Length: 64
Image (cartoon, rainbow, N blue to C red; front, side):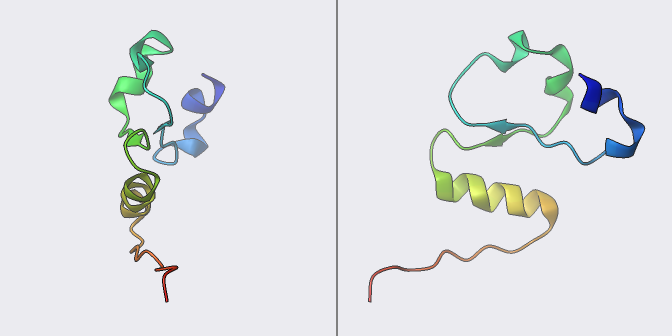
């Protein structure tokens, strides 16, 4: 709640959903923020988070 009330952190808080849960129970204020979902795929979560930051994402293939 402290970070949400800090004016210098406006537009810098991005909640990450790591495990499925009822996030509305933690804080009603979280519903007003764009949530990045990592529950289905770590790669998709990374892509979505970087998109929020305005950064492109290209996965690295580990197979030769």
